[in-house]
Image 1 (cartoon, chains in turn purple, yellow, cyan, orange):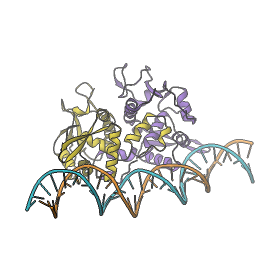
Image 2 (tube, helix red, strand yellow; image 1 turned 180 degrees about the vertical axis):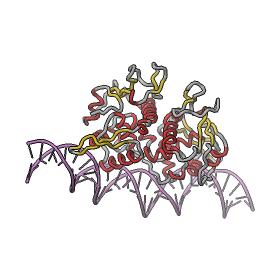
Image 3 (cartoon, protein in one colour; image 1 turned 180 degrees about the horizontal axis):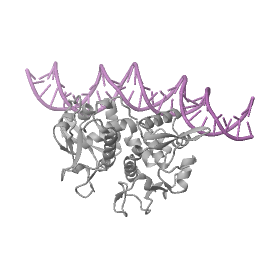
Image 4 (tube, chains in turn cyan, purple, green, red; image 1 turned 45 degrees about the vertical axis):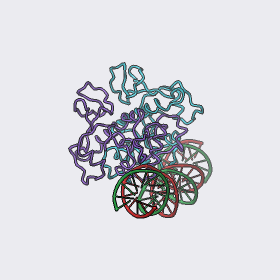
Length: 175
Length: 175
DNA sequence: ACTGTCGGTTCGTTCACCGAACCGAGAGGT
DNA sequence: ACCTCTCGGTTCGGTGAACGAACCGACAGT
């Protein structure tokens, strides 16, 4: 999506944010990072995104301090991309956006629900846990559960399969 | 930003949302609508956006039920664009994104603060009022105040001037 | 040496964005 | 009647980003 071309005179923090995370694909990459996707190839297969665009977005996110690139094996050398604290705070943007979309545009049953791992309660639209006293639930305490709905044509990539099979704690490696 | 080209197989409410509000300029238009901007010409001057793009985005937002196009005078016929309830719920996305950006990327003093109109308290990062018992503050109860910071080169369009001059209740017409 | 995997880069095509010009409806002035 | 101005667009040629298929280099295993 957006670029900095004309945003620079906006004097607005929203414009700054959109230059970083407002481009096409970027928020979907960050969402996958919450799901525990960490490797280039897994992002690629799950998102079905052009390779060059993925490489570019990952570099931008690393530059912005939203993802950290980290060596996880040496032979052969392989890096993974994990959310930083700064990136983790984007949960407060991504969850309300998903929840808004689900409320207004969902067709059929939902494919995924998000629950407070400590008590199993489904999060409210603002991302809080109603049974634990309306406290904010940080993403690390959230579990993504397969929902009652099933997609018409389920995707077969490893990430989609794993997310359909079992509940999964956000931020933990998925594969 | 984004388009629907490859988002359709994502089976994800986030992808659906991004097809609507993830395109370049769209969230800045919605933000201006919260500020009380309602007319084509005011969006145009404040955002410095290509005319064709603005017309396209407004039409998309009206189609999605996020804005409502409403006749406000008959001679000559003029329409204004106002947020619907569905659009108003995007405050829970826009405010956390602004707040995230402000925390991590702000340079100097902030140009704008958001306060609970009932008590004057500045909203916390999640958009709640700390002094009123951490309750969610709907956008209609929020006042945008000119912040302590001043832009290096202040913009002179009517919207920017009005926002710099005085506090203003969100959703109320600005001009 | 051959094959396969992973994580990219390169490159030609397509498509959205850009920005400047143009346009039509209507108001107001003379 | 005519001219001029404002408002809210549409049109159009040029540019830059996204797309997708091919290519590439490092390394492991056989």
